[in-house]
Length: 221
Length: 221
Image 1: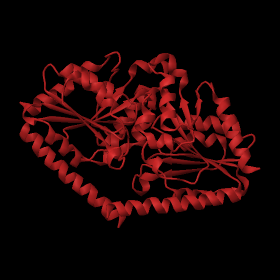
Image 2 (image 1 turned 180 degrees about the vertical axis):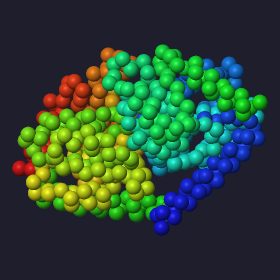
Image 3 (image 1 turned 45 degrees about the vertical axis):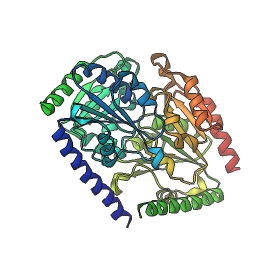
Image 4 (image 1 turned 120 degrees about the horizontal axis):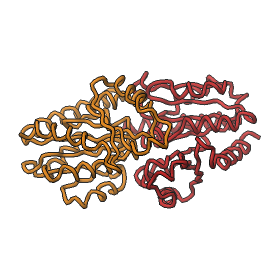
């Protein structure tokens, strides 16, 4: 019985993700889903991405957290539409589901929006199991987390189109092999796009932004 | 129906955790459950704890991972009993459950063991929901993860008796306020024990080890 119920949850999530894909295709909106461990720097990266792109595109943000609205508060300065999903209000879930994303999208005026950024809950496991109907899953891995993470959390890396290796400004102070983590990421997903970025110094940010621009342009034109 | 099934899972987990508590009381074995985000340094810390305590106590380890036996391999040098639970073999679960811990404990000769260290799966969410029958939950938070984590993952910090703030050797290179994270941890759990440690340099390790010794001694004598 347990297995059956879980199967139902995943199937209804997938169905709703399909509806989101259709809606975003019709409205010409590009949507990315940022996923990572807690504290890998998703919010700082989101802040930088918005700063770089808001001159050219209309952006909206969906912030997922179990508790607190701190991440959303950090982005308020950009004066763009932000919806916070606080999952502790309905059970403390460790991931976002497509039905909640649909409810958020209904709050936005999608005719005027080009890019939706979902900042998923900090967790390398559960969010990978829930399709949200986005165009690009981006996993953020910080250099302080160890080279083995793509092997230990294979579904997350295998289901992401892109990996951002973050906090590269800390490399001089760590015993961390960039070569090894890239090899492990490509073992989990041979086609994964990789960007090495420091959101703090801006190092490597240009390549990531250029990549995002290509995705957005291809969808909205 | 979904809610009922989840309730059943939690209740049977709790029941089995109670049986583990009874077994460990009878056998005079102290058990700790190490939990954290991916990459916070749990395995390096486990390595150091074993190194410091194995002269005085018989230790066994239960390693939880979704995929790979890498963490267990790092500890093999200590020549102590280690059991690896690889959850991808049965569904890729993001946490450990008490029934699996019981199966592992049945493999150990508990009459000769003083301390069992569980290294839980890297995840700040789901593991907090599953009691394992241990004596002490220890949450490891690295200074690279940000000061806000105790507020964003309140159940993890509220249900842990002890917090280890790890990787403190990196503090000079980070914009991280130790005062703020300690305040947030105490807001989530006013009674939490806090130890600031660098497993790499050994800084602060002595206090943590002394604390663990007190717990072990009180249980096994």
